[in-house]
Each structure stands twice: as structure tokens, then as C-alpha cells.
Length: 273
Image (cartoon, rainbow, N blue to C red; front, side):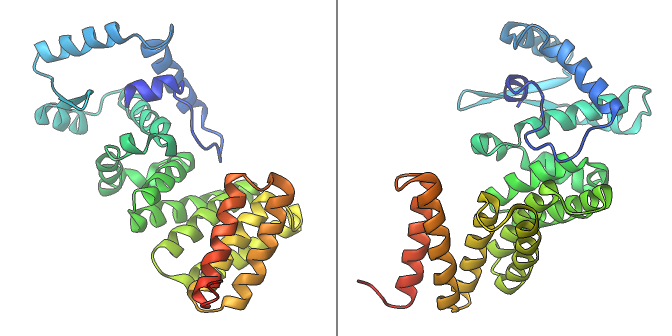
């Protein structure tokens, strides 16, 4: 986690809302502490060895990855003590986790889930920044933990709408992810309703041919298809495919996915040829 976060310069993978100055200062302190001249493996190994010599941490190696475990008494002491700089350390921990919440590191993200659950269980989740909640929600959805992902994305969407006073591309992106998470749970009618509301707002802002609009149309078509509303789904998928071909060409990944979705809808109708 530390290596990946340092390589990403402890930056948010999704910047839906500006961080407070206090947070930015804590992250700056962490960069200077860990990453001022780039990631230094020898320096970190030396720090870990010092901690081990005092029995403050234990280490385990699994598949070329080093895992650290704080002694339970140290964890309890950190939770119970009201240290003047404890909030800064908590901020640093949050940012390390947030920096790792990326779809290109899903293998690593499997190990983040216990930390996310811990934040949720001790009510710290209520204080998580919107960027943290969106990042964690996206990763948890990819890992199939849909209920927790829905909770985080829903809370972030409510907060962002309250902050911006209206829907922007930032809120609409989160709304799309939330609808997709609801869809993944088989609640297709709910996902359909949310996609319709999102689509209406997107078209007003971007028009009907914007990539974000096409993504929502495709999601809506999938909800229709799974409710046996094949003709509606087919019409939408044909539109998406036409625009993908025009914008991306025949061999682009998104064009191929649009073709695949349309093929599935044909197969549902037994139009095998």
C-alpha cells in the first residue's frame, strides 16, 4: 500500500471535491516524511526494522508483498490516547488508502477492504471525505461488495449535491456509479429510474452524443433487457453502437462492448442468426 500510494504521490484517484487545508498540510508532511526524494525502499526497510526491534509491529511476507501488523496493545493505545497530532496521522492513513483505491490495482484492493470496514464500523466512515467514499465505493463494487459500495456512493452523492447546490459532472459521475451498483444487485427497476434521472440531466448539459451520455444510455438499455423490454433495449443499443463507431472506430474496446451488448439482446429474443 505504501509503495503504490507513494508512486501515485499520495494523490486522490477521483477529485470530486477539494480537500481542506488541514488535510493538504498533513499530506504534504507525509510526502516530506516518506517520499520527498522519491520512494526509498532501503529507508523504509530500515524504519520497519526499528519498529520490529521494539516489538511495535510484526511482519509477514505473502507473494512478494510485505504486510505489517501493529501490536494490538499499540492499536488500543493509539485509539484511546488523545494525542495533539493524532488527527494528522489519521488523515495520513486515510490518504494512503485513498491513493490505492484504483481499478488498476484490484489485487491490492482486496487487502484494503478490512480497513474500509474498520472505518465504517467505528463511525469514522461518517467523517470520510467525499473523495475517499467515491474511491472506496468504486473499488468495493469491482470486488463485488455491493451493499457497502452502495452505502458509500450514496452518502458521497448526497454530500456532493449539498455542497455544489446542483448537479455537475462530478455528481453525475457518482450517480452513474451508484446506479450501476444497484443494477449489480439485481434491482433493475431502481437502476432504471436512477439512470433515467441522470440521463435527463446529462442531456441538458452535454447533448445526446456525449460519451458520458452514451454510457448511461448503455446502462439503461441493459436494465431494459433484463426486464425483458428487448425492443427498447435494442433501440438504445443501436444508437450507442452507431455513435461508438463514429467516435471510436470499429476496433475500439467501447465499440466492441456495444456490439456485444446488442448481440446479447438479440440472443434474448432468439434471433440467433
